[in-house]
Length: 397
Ligand code: ADP
Ligand code: MG
Image (cartoon, rainbow, N blue to C red; front, side, top):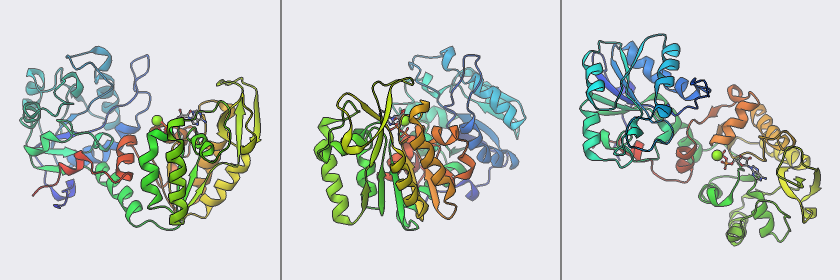
């Protein structure tokens, strides 16, 4: 298959470059961006283009507007303000996407200028990957760059359709995300340890299944561990448990055993009488979960066991918190795993998934991790072995 060109392969000086970024950042009540990680992640690409004297036209979605035109609460105005600070230059925010305001702003651009189009999802044609909308986007520029790894698993007009009408390149973030994840999956340093948690088995079944083929050990925590525990015949009290997935969970553990993959479940758990910060809590062995209590974190013995396995890993992929880390009484397992991953400096480590990354940030460990992925859904789909439409669209014949 044709290779993807990256921006190192192109010459962008004096050109109008349409760049798809993932600026889907949270905005607080005062209308300010409350976490600018995604904006910062796009800076290497934006700066490289500006340094070459390109005219940079940025486009992104934010949130879930209705797709019937401008909605103040989903405007990219807060993004434009924060980006202006980060780049230390004026950002012109168009009032529309492909309409008269965007066209006028783009016509007035000089080299090194930055225009941000309004929220792509104000137009319902974006998510439908409508060819006319994709062509209207393409007509705004001479070259297209996709740096929005976070939406690369979606075939939308701005992430896929537009690439058919312009010379297309991957930005630095896109390149780094895809390369880092692919090389861990294709040629991991061994032993390769995957840590999987989060809420449900049903959300992660394909990820677990794919990792059984790649990893040497899989450590299970989070709400999903109770479906696996139930599949081994233990009672799980009032824990989150998906009865429809018990059989499949047992089959998955069998498959792991057949392949010689170590598949570890918690040996102890923190249980509570209610899903609340001030609940009555106890730590119990996994075969002693009281009928009227729910497991909300892995226990200390499990955290130690998992920590030892992580300490001996050559590579680590972590998706999904080990417990309800948002509540202090149930955060110890996630925190211990985060510290264990950060402490293994010899390993290649990837943190993927929205809440796992939030946990790493909560403990201020992001800069101690080898790689923190900016794409939740997109990184999961790569792990599942799926092709990403946003990457495939960049392959030229
Ligand atoms: P990620 O975004 O990293 O992929 P998920 O979205 O799958 O992770 O799951 C994260 C959520 O799982 C968190 O909000 C956390 O509170 C919840 N969770 C973790 N452990 C449990 C548990 N034992 N019971 C219920 N919910 C849990
Ligand atoms: Mg999540």
